[in-house]
Length: 255
Image 1 (cartoon, rainbow, N blue to C red):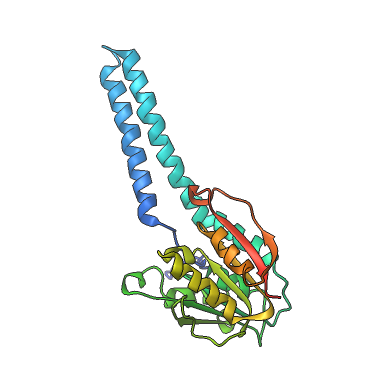
Image 2 (cartoon, rainbow, N blue to C red):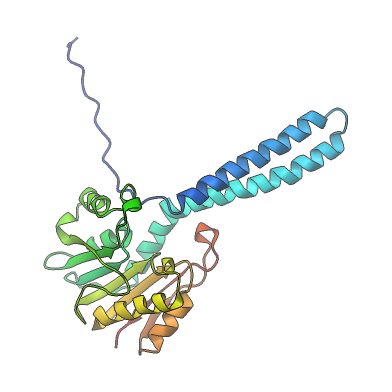
């Protein structure tokens, strides 16, 4: 037998698009587990002297705990599976020639950015823009986005910029397709969200398409775009991703 150990083949790396609202997910898991265990403890301590009330309390606390745990699981599923499926549905709703200039406004780790890059080839280019703050660097940085692009094999067609959604650093009518996913709602004020929508519309070429996916305010976004003459191509119903029933998306065309 050879003294040299045989190296085991390494699994190919996968892109990491992150867990959305990780603090909230941890809270849901911990609260659910504590409530379930508390109810179980109440039943165990009273199983001999007061089995009926003990069981009733266990059912109350246990069911509430299971509700928290179920919410945490749905939120994790939404981040790791659900949003990828929605991404693919939205991108399939767009017409692709293969040479588009694409902007992902508020690109984060590049979920939509990289999905778009897979649908184009040079001279097409997928550009992501976001604001990278110090606290984001460990989980949501430009470097992490480009690493995902390398893992997915599209780094040569991806570029990442720093910029504010309310004042995009691009000229008018520059992009064939503009995307935005789970980004605009992070702007607290209605006025700021409207500025972001207007900016996306400004940098979009006539005949181009704009697709927005968000957990809130999508009706406001759509109304603002309709007031500018946007033609609605496709609009989703409500969904329960992240246990938020207001999650929606739409695609419009700039006539």
